[in-house]
Image (cartoon, rainbow, N blue to C red; front, top):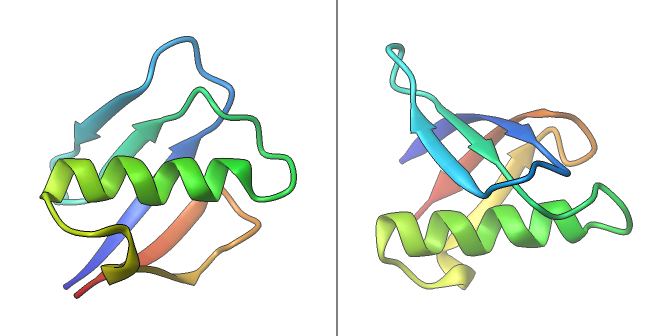
Length: 72
């Protein structure tokens, strides 16, 4: 399953919002430094979808706010 995700790093609260177009808007406490926000994103998605972290892969946008994520 492929999901479009908009990431907001360095937020006060960690929050996942489902948008009307079936994409996700995810607020992360992690800063976008040295891949910490991407690691936090994978952890948050794994908890949200109740899957292992290894089954989540960032396909596009590794250094951008808009990402395409694959969940196996």
